[in-house]
Image (tube, rainbow, N blue to C red):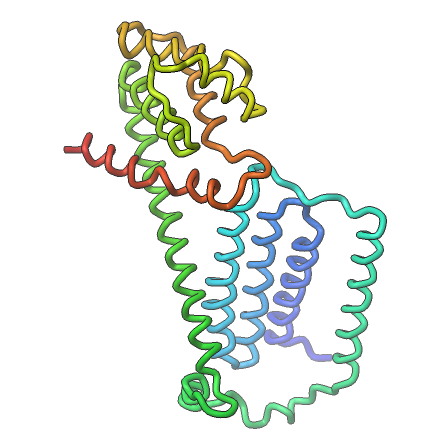
Length: 295
């Protein structure tokens, strides 16, 4: 068999796609699985382009790699906690998984070995884009206007989620820059504002020095990561810095930041509404505060 550049490119794409697919179904990190799926879609698009199916390759990149995968990633971020791993398959789950895998493999082998896939099947080459466009926008028989509109809505949702994530990253970056450039007193003020903003997002009415002990007991009960007395201790440190003008030690500032990180993360079992609120609900407030300070 003659080794050509086309054969080498196909082999590289095939191995890349197969390895990525294997990693996608074997990793225990769900976010990594979505990333490997993205690599699989890239490899599949490369094979389409090699077959001169430029339209299918573009659709693969725009809709699946650029739309579906992005939707998967945002769904994972909104429904899973940090460090979530997949459960180990045991008992009947392992049996069902193996059975489904073997059945899928059998179907793929049957379809692959049952067709010769000779090049003569593709003698006409790729359809003209105009023909594809008429089929996509046709509402008659064999028309695809309904799936086309559904995909449009899906892509719009992906664009909205992408904009939200970019805004979140920009606000976090700007907030980090301002925090690092501020003095010790201003840093404590920023931490105090962020803490009570997140407490408000959780539905707790709180302010510095107001019902501290009652809220401390509630937070220790609701958050497994928060110890009894931790909020009371953090509140007292912030009062000393904000109202008393005292400069806190480095370990005291770390304690405040640690408490902030605990209340800014979702708890196991929280619904998608609270997850969405904690991820994006603070964006307008933080952006407005940064804009005011900039003025």
